[in-house]
Image (tube, rainbow, N blue to C red; front, side, top):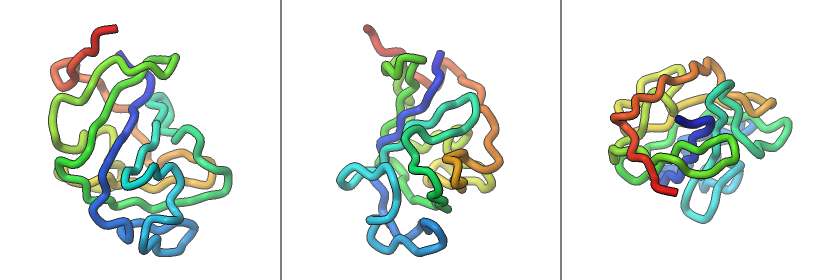
Length: 132
């Protein structure tokens, strides 16, 4: 059903992340920020953040609650389904801790891969298909 997940998360507290060991107090250090949103695209097969800059490491613990949107993308990076809940999809965006539907939690290595990545199963009941 999907090869990637696209994230568009309104982060409440940017300082809840470190980038290359430095607290990102105002969100200016974290790669893939677009305005007030954090917007990574993650390849589901291996947990790699697309377009992550080489050599950057990050420890992310972002509180999002119901301020995010999430899409499954096909191999051509076209949106094919939207997350049907207003909470964070934990099985996709929480690795190494429990986010309780409110947090994006994971570590990104210098290679752009999420530590402890587990390829999530995709339950079609949790996603609303998009019409082409």
